[in-house]
Amino acid sequence: MDDITPTPRRRPYDLPLPPPPDALRRGPLREGTFSSALHDPRTAVVLGRWLGAALLTCFLTGLFSHLVQESPAWLPSRPVNGYRVTQGLHVISGIAAVPLLVAKLWTVYPKLFEWPPVRSVLHALERLGIAVLVAAMLLELLTGLFNTLQWYPWPFPFRQTHFWLGWLATGGLLLHVAAKLPQIRTHWRRARRAARNTGTTGTTGTGPVEPQRRAFLTAVAASVGLVTLTTAGQSVPWLRSLDLFAPRRPDLGPQGLPVNRTAAQAGTTTLPADWRLEVGGPHPVRLSLDELARLPQYEAELPIACVEGWSASARWGGVRIRDLLALAGVPAGTALRITSLELDGPYRVTELPAEHARDPLTLLALRVNGEVLAPDHGYPARIIAPNRPGVLQTKWVTRIEVG
Amino acid sequence: MRTLRALLLLGGLALTGWGLTGLLTDHYIEHPLDIAEWAVGALVLHDALWLPVVCALGATLARRTAVRTALILTAAVTAVALPAVLRAGTDTTNPTVLPLPYLRNWLLVLAAIAVLAGALVLRRRRPGGRSKAEDPTEEEH
Image 1: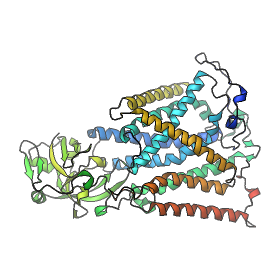
Image 2: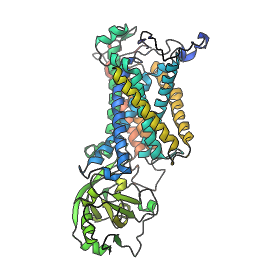
Image 3: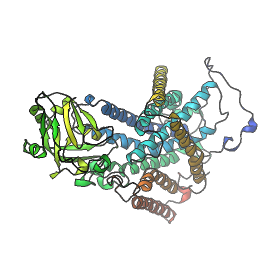
Image 4: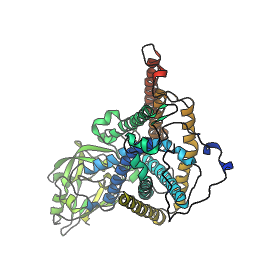
């Protein structure tokens, strides 16, 4: 498989290491253990391109989501479905990367047993880097997939670990591409150039490679298609009927909507008898549910777009946030702090940026799809605003004040 | 190409260093070694258990393209669906998480893959169909 042995160049910065005795070359370390012709650089380059595209999409959309959650003011309130698309893409590309990573690692598996195991200090470092890259990638995809199921069997916190591992894995990927750049260039195209350059004829002793490769790549592409089609329905409306394995179905839940955190989980199943919405400002107001219902009511079709990838559109009804601010004498274009009734949780208090607060689509919703909000959807009142992560669409709102 | 390579190298080192620093210094991550354990565990399971099984299957049972394709599809679907199959019904605090019959769906998709692969194999065996010897994608090893 190692048909690219570049002419040894003098590398003044590298330190060659002596080869270990041949007696140690046993088991899979022997030559010819792996006979498939598809453990070759061309297959690795084709799979690497697909995998690289998926991972880069996944990393960038994930980074975007992280920034938006850390500092919400960073995100404009348009397009309405912006975060829905980027976060849907994050989970779709992550799931697509699973079969691609497995196929890529199978293709390069014989490299694990190359002989001699280390030729030089630089070679040893490169191999160590690949170990870190593969371990980080495997754990990154595993934690991401399990997070969509809200399943956390590990002892470390998900969000921070997934975030930092993403940097580590992407850094490892860039280093890997840097190390392999000459091979990638040689095998970028199927053209005969590759064969001429490396002395191979494009065939092995057992038959032509190209049809085998086509069959393998077709199978991998079909796998990507299959896992994508059977899970993407949690974020892509027209794929909903094919949703077989996604942890969510956007139409299943109270009032036809999934829930990320239930009222029981948040400790908000019963509303305190003296509940009033407090709006802080120069003329603070306290409004009962009846008083809120007597204010001008508006409707908006807006998505809940969860960080775990699922999203669902719904028709929300309620009071415009900017109307509430006017009541309290708060000037339009003020960033707000929203407090929930929930007892704990990292999103009990959230920030509503000025642009979202001013937006006519941003509501303090009292109804969804024509019904009074169910407790799981934030009864008596929740924030719903365009283009933001679902965790920031605070439920069970009790206080709105200048942030 | 030299410039591109240098940029990739520098960028890669920067991102790796940033990620490692974060893993080691983030206040929420109390025991970074836990993460290392899981990462090494994933690597060992993948390289020392999963891949040898795949290679053994590929060299013995799965010599036909149709069978190989079916197994690749099966592995991909299982990797994505099995966590849902195992997890469904175990945590009932939020019924909108994992609301589907995942076990049934998984078995149905596996059955569909098997039927398709079987049909393909049979069609090639029938007179008039392409025989195994003519199939250029068969591998011998």
